[in-house]
Image (cartoon, rainbow, N blue to C red; front, side, top):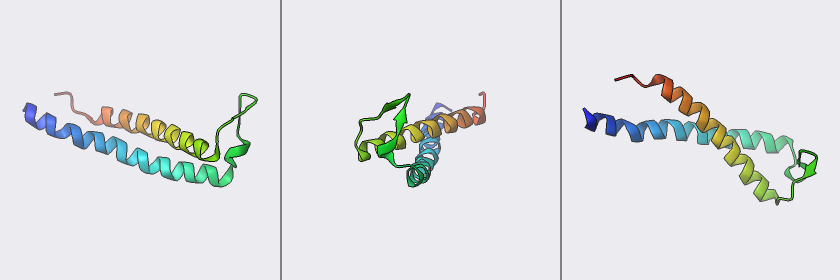
Length: 81
Protein backbone atom coordinates (compact mmCIF):
# COMPACT_ATOMS: atom_id res chain seq x y z
CA UNK A 1 0.00 0.00 0.00
CA UNK A 2 2.82 2.56 0.42
CA UNK A 3 3.09 2.84 -3.38
CA UNK A 4 -0.59 3.76 -3.60
CA UNK A 5 -0.14 6.49 -0.98
CA UNK A 6 2.94 7.80 -2.80
CA UNK A 7 0.93 8.02 -6.02
CA UNK A 8 -1.80 10.05 -4.32
CA UNK A 9 0.54 12.70 -2.97
CA UNK A 10 1.31 14.46 -6.32
CA UNK A 11 -2.39 14.44 -7.18
CA UNK A 12 -3.25 15.94 -3.81
CA UNK A 13 -0.60 18.64 -4.20
CA UNK A 14 -1.96 19.59 -7.62
CA UNK A 15 -5.52 19.45 -6.29
CA UNK A 16 -4.48 22.07 -3.73
CA UNK A 17 -2.19 24.31 -5.81
CA UNK A 18 -4.08 24.49 -9.11
CA UNK A 19 -7.45 25.77 -7.80
CA UNK A 20 -5.71 28.21 -5.47
CA UNK A 21 -3.64 29.51 -8.42
CA UNK A 22 -6.77 30.04 -10.50
CA UNK A 23 -8.53 31.85 -7.67
CA UNK A 24 -5.46 34.03 -7.11
CA UNK A 25 -5.64 35.05 -10.78
CA UNK A 26 -9.32 35.94 -10.50
CA UNK A 27 -8.99 37.64 -7.11
CA UNK A 28 -6.03 39.81 -8.04
CA UNK A 29 -7.69 40.71 -11.33
CA UNK A 30 -10.87 41.79 -9.55
CA UNK A 31 -9.07 43.67 -6.79
CA UNK A 32 -6.72 45.60 -9.03
CA UNK A 33 -9.45 46.45 -11.51
CA UNK A 34 -11.15 48.31 -8.65
CA UNK A 35 -8.13 49.70 -6.76
CA UNK A 36 -5.11 51.55 -8.13
CA UNK A 37 -2.01 49.81 -6.71
CA UNK A 38 -0.04 53.07 -6.57
CA UNK A 39 -2.53 54.53 -4.08
CA UNK A 40 -2.43 51.62 -1.60
CA UNK A 41 -1.76 52.58 2.01
CA UNK A 42 -0.78 50.01 4.65
CA UNK A 43 -0.97 50.97 8.34
CA UNK A 44 -1.07 54.68 7.48
CA UNK A 45 2.11 54.43 5.37
CA UNK A 46 2.33 54.73 1.61
CA UNK A 47 3.69 51.55 0.05
CA UNK A 48 6.82 52.24 -1.95
CA UNK A 49 6.39 49.41 -4.44
CA UNK A 50 6.18 49.72 -8.17
CA UNK A 51 2.88 48.94 -9.82
CA UNK A 52 4.20 45.55 -10.97
CA UNK A 53 5.58 44.84 -7.48
CA UNK A 54 2.19 45.53 -5.95
CA UNK A 55 0.48 43.25 -8.49
CA UNK A 56 3.00 40.51 -7.70
CA UNK A 57 2.67 40.85 -3.92
CA UNK A 58 -1.12 40.83 -4.18
CA UNK A 59 -1.12 37.78 -6.42
CA UNK A 60 1.13 35.79 -4.10
CA UNK A 61 -0.89 36.85 -1.06
CA UNK A 62 -4.10 35.62 -2.71
CA UNK A 63 -2.33 32.41 -3.79
CA UNK A 64 -1.16 31.82 -0.23
CA UNK A 65 -4.65 32.35 1.17
CA UNK A 66 -6.14 30.02 -1.45
CA UNK A 67 -3.50 27.39 -0.75
CA UNK A 68 -4.25 27.49 2.96
CA UNK A 69 -7.98 27.10 2.34
CA UNK A 70 -7.48 24.27 -0.18
CA UNK A 71 -5.00 22.53 2.12
CA UNK A 72 -7.47 22.54 4.98
CA UNK A 73 -10.12 21.08 2.69
CA UNK A 74 -7.73 18.38 1.46
CA UNK A 75 -6.75 17.60 5.05
CA UNK A 76 -10.38 17.05 5.97
CA UNK A 77 -10.92 14.75 2.97
CA UNK A 78 -7.98 12.41 3.67
CA UNK A 79 -8.94 9.01 5.07
CA UNK A 80 -7.42 8.06 8.40
CA UNK A 81 -5.72 4.85 7.22
